[in-house]
Length: 433
Image (cartoon, rainbow, N blue to C red; front, top):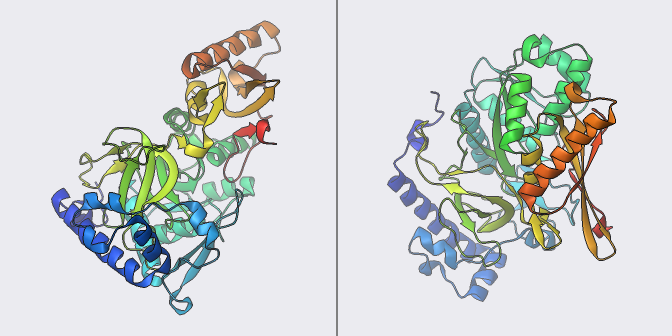
């Protein structure tokens, strides 16, 4: 089994924790001394760097939120001068003011190192051809994957997003062995390939997908692996943290978080109190070596669990589970909490439906309504009303049993729902319109 940096990745956990504490202590002293933002926050919290005497004391430090970055637009939280910056990335700003992230040369080096470890843990290396179908530019996905793939000696095919038929041709002609993109785009690519008369399973050398940038369930993974004949690995990161940084390994039992780069907490999203390993809560990360834009106890909003047991692959760093949704993505339907990932989980267990769906939430009078539009699979699509009614009742029963709320299902023809080359848009909440 390949390991990129055995000295770090297989470090005994006690040594890892000692290293984390040294890095945390250094970071907090630096921010208290040189960051007006963090100095003020720590004073408001009544905490001094001397109060940080163990890793558990990170809980004494104040949280940081995405709104802090928007309020400080573009660079008022930066702790590196403009002359020290090597690059900017900017979020889309679709939910508010964009966030600007700066990088020093060391920040870029740590980012590349994290992805070199990640791709190696997925079994990739020299001799592989990695097609990067994340967006390039202000979005962090494309460039992050690009430099990580080059670092491990792989050959990079920088296709970015779009022009899907051309991407499939290049995948064949250049003998691509791995692709980095969103899971929804890979499914779309599989459909386009079929229309071209190409089987990704049989007519290409693709064997691995490094998939992320949107939540996806284990059931969706099963569909992708079964349909396309590849291994599908989950990749995680956000623009604020440095973009994609962490992946599953070949064991596919959780996403490794490199402890020398990040300190992870899982907290109760309502109280902010820490939760033990194995309990579901909000992911909170302190980036330990970031120079240009340090992030201390950053509440990402993603819901997951943590496993701090060593992995069978030999890596000793903690793992987080698949992202199960976002705190702000949770839908409240007649008092019941519903995550889109729960809907996907139920649908992907029904062989009669396809892999594309959309959730439409509305309000009629005083009552919330929830409609799930889902494509019927090609193999089960029929003009017979009775056949479709049987599938419709099955979908509604499965969703009602899982969600504990009444759901209407609308079956649509294969290929009729929107496809996305970037992040998929699964939810339309008309109550907010």
